[in-house]
Amino acid sequence: MRGCAYKIVVIGTSLGGLHALEILLSGLPKSLPLPVVIVQHRHKNSDDSLSVFLQQHCAMPVTEAEDKEAIAPGRVYLAPPDYHLLVESGHCALSTEAPVCYARPSINVLFESAADAYGKSAIGVILTGSSHDGTQGLLSIKAHGGLVLVQEPTTAESAIMPQSAIYALQQHYKLGRARDWILPLPDIAPVLVNLCHSVLR
Image (cartoon, rainbow, N blue to C red; front, side, top):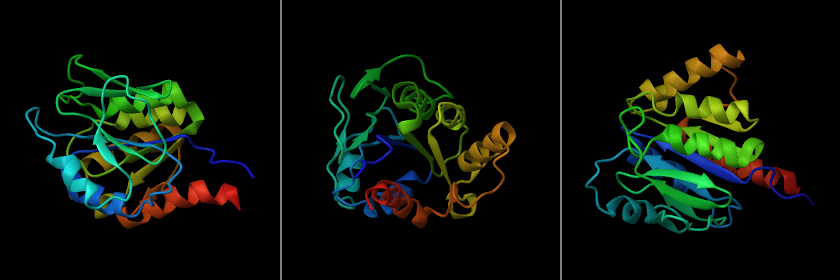
């Protein structure tokens, strides 16, 4: 039997992300054979309440990433406030470089690092948000052969971020509105699970 073709899931979200992440993470089993790495835009002085809240809805351990921390399957890593989070050669890296798209952490920074480090083994997911952060990063994942998933804008609290990603992907790759990559929020977790488990059958 072959293992999962994918090695990492990276997720980006902003306005409305708390509820969206609650729904998505609650649908992922403890046995998911992938790490999940998340950038949620939040204030630079935020405390650890986000990880505490999400842990209540997630079977996998949820923690804020630490610099040089090894990335392990079946875990959820959150970008700490006011740090860019990158994934490099199986570990996390934190950066205080300038904000990107007015954000630190930036979704683009995470996604572009995942594209570089994992190539076609990366899955990028854009959820609700009120900025264009994440669009270029998702294009990078697609360009490296990875899989891209975008929340259906009508199911997003703020449709700006998913609409921006969809428009860019359609312009660059002529993907159309195929149901296999634009998904209602409740369908994203089951798709991620099926992508891993289908190759084991």
